[in-house]
Amino acid sequence: MNANGEILSMHQYPSPNPHVRLDEVTYWSQGLRVKGLLARPKVQGQYEALLYLRGGLQSIGMVRPARIAQFAMHGFIVFAPYYRGNRGGEGKDEFGGQDRYDAVFGVEVLKQFTPVKKVNLFGFSRGGLMALWTAILRDDVKSVVTWAGVSDATATYWDRIDMRRGLKRIVGGTPNKVPENYESRTPLYNIENVQSPVLIIHGAEDQHVNIEHAYQLERYLKDKGKQVETWYSSRLKHHYPPNLNRETVKKINDWMKQQ
Figure 1: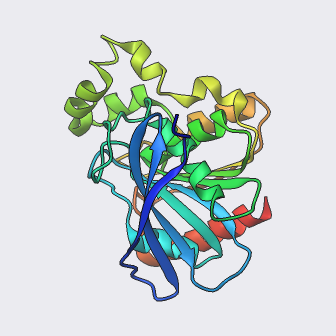
Figure 2: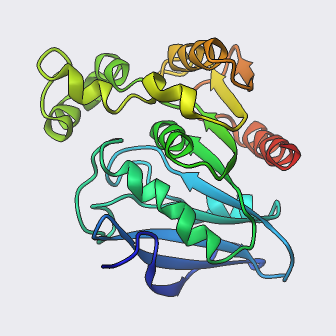
């Protein structure tokens, strides 16, 4: 039996940053060959581990080499799963269904490159869903950051008219027809299992992921007595302007290191 998170192959990938090495990794997840991108600072040293969980669906929101290299430059070894069914990986994208295990076992990939016992999780947009599930299903998580993150799969269906056709196909129907399929993808109902501090970042003008996802997650975490911090911004949208984006990434990295 092949072990989940076992690396099957890896090959160097063109890096946009001369100080960061990138490798595309193929690994086992529930018997499927799944792929992701690994970023490592070229200078030898002791680095923290970061599982970067991308947003989007299928090819939309795919892992960007420059983005994970940016995190690596702040002193992290970063692994970013593409999720099953993407970039030649087996299986199909399930928007937080069984593909959550591609994130869960991505931690095992990371641990093969760093001696740390606990890893940090970062999720953007749909990646927020994946980060929360990973924190629920693992006990070796140091911190969780969800930026413009989805926390409620049902709300995503109603909020995003442009995604409804894709979600119906992936999830098996509408929330009216198969409510249990959306509820089983929503981590809020298992939030008591999150043991690490959570940072929620969201712009109030976000038209892709409504800020209600952040408010709801904050309420659920506080109700369970969890450690949560929020950085809400009144005039910002889903994607922050470049300068503010860089500034926020630096603050995120500092926050993770302090946990």
